[in-house]
Amino acid sequence: MTNAYPQIAGQSVSRLEAISDGIFAVAMTLLVLDLAIKGTTVPHGQHPLWTAGAGSEHEALRELRGLAPKVVPYVMSFMTLGIFWVGQQTQLNHIERANRQLTYIHVAFLSAITLMPFSTRFLSAYLTYRTPFLVYWLNLVLAGWLLFASLAYAGRHGLFKAETTEEIRAALRRRIYGYQSCYLVALGLSVVNTYVSLGAFVAVQLMAIISPPVRPFNRI
Image (cartoon, one colour):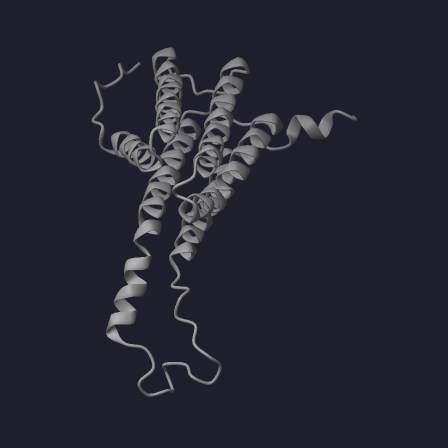
């Protein structure tokens, strides 16, 4: 009787999908907060809404130009979250049933996803330094490793659907290996120039999104 709860807990794949969708939606929304214009603060009682002549078109344009360094990290991280969402969704689509251990692996994966707004904000604030790129990369590694851990665990414990062939599972593994290797190369470029590294990260994300399928899998 003492082992009854672990045997029945966390078996709903649909509930796991539901909480994942919610957390991804919140994380993607939080990314935009870093684009908030912060230089428009004026003395108390002189807000532009009720003070004639406060501010100017020139100041508004200057504020808008000031957002430029933050736009690229925002777009990059939005793509990153989209890629991880698709990766998790693809895995869950091939899983027949879950258990408590697999559910907690995905909960840990979602904790890494919630860190993305922080690592993005840190990166956009210090684009000329290498440490923020290392932090951002560690965030990607943690999320990728946990996604791979869920894949490996489901395979070892027979949680995949019967029609999920080894070819499909190998493709899921290769995608994680491949893009994590590309992220490492992009991080390495920060030693040369951080803006080159940023461009490499963006290029990897674009490649993940626009790359066409090689060939269809054989159907059983």
